[in-house]
Each structure stands twice: as C-alpha cells, then as structure tokens.
Amino acid sequence: MSLVASLIYRRRHPLLRRAVQEALALYGVEVPAAVEIGPGLRVFHRGFGLVLHPWVTLGADVTLYNGVTVGRADPWVPQGQSLMERVVVEDEGVLCSGAKVLCKEGVLTVGRGTVVGANAVLTRSTGPYEIWAGAPARQVGDRTRLPAQDDARPLQDSARSTERATSVARDGGSGRSSGPVR
Image 1 (spheres, rainbow, N blue to C red):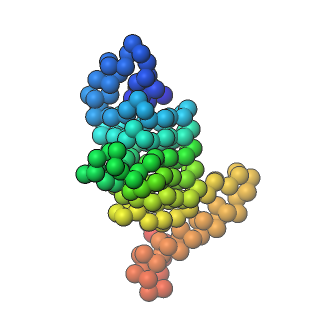
Image 2 (image 1 turned 135 degrees about the vertical axis):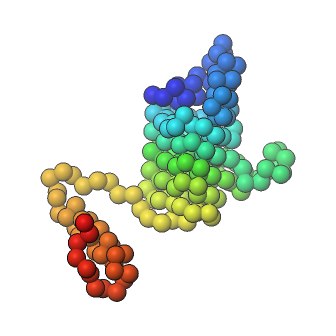
Image 3 (image 1 turned 120 degrees about the vertical axis):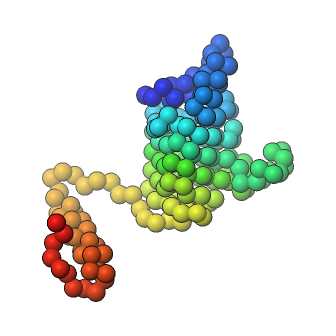
C-alpha cells in the first residue's frame, strides 16, 4: 500500500486526524473524513491533485491516479441546494490521470470495473466493465477479462486483428500493404 493510500485510511483517526490532513495537503490530496472507502484502495503517482467530494463512496480495489476530481458539477450552487446526492465508484473502478467525475443530480455510479480515461469528463452513470474517454466522456469500449492461458486461440485472433489494424494504418486504408513493419 502506498504512503498516500495509508494516510487516506488514517484520516479519521481521532488523534492523527489533523496531522494526516496536513500530510495529505503536502501532496495536494483532499479526501474529507466523510468519504466512504472500501478495502484495497490504490493511489498511484502519490495522488498529486486528487480531490474527492464528501459525498463520494469508493468500493473495494478502486484505483485512483493523480489529478482525479470526483464531485459536484454545480459548484456555484450552495451545497445545501445542490441536486447531487452521491457519487459511487463501484469495486475495481479505475480513474486515470486527470479524470473528472462530476454529478449534476441524483446518484452518479461508475460501474464495477469501469475505466474512466485520462482527462475524461464523466457526467453520467456507466455500466460495468466499460471504458469511457473524452470530454464529455463517451463509452469507447468494454473491458474483458483476459482469456485463460491454456486458451491460445483468442490471443491469436487478437494478434491477427492488431496486425490488420497496423496494416491499414500503415497503408492509409488503401488495402495495399507494403509488407511487415520492421
């Protein structure tokens, strides 16, 4: 467990609370005591610039990178009048560097195992094991589990499709190939 993740887990300790908040502030990390965090939190690149709203729930084995913001989409409205209820990042969710997850109203849920790409701006709920990217974020793919090692066929098919994509990119989509890339 990283230093920042262990500090985040200790932010509610009655005797260490203030010291932990100051230590996290040195990294630019703001995680209020009200944030609910499941086991196995991973914070990469020391979480520089990580900001979580108090009404955030992180499930088990969530991964956060630097520059992530999770909170309200209406910061100009007084918090008591905001329509946001909660942001939930379910188990195994991944929020990449610079991702912004902003809730306008109700509950925004980042589905189990979903990846929110670098610098994406997500303003709506996602399904499980999806990949979202862009600003505004849109679904660009699905995460699949890696095939078992004894099942080599999907890997071969994947290698062939990668080879075809490389060929198309190399010849500009004309269908003519100049041979293998070296």
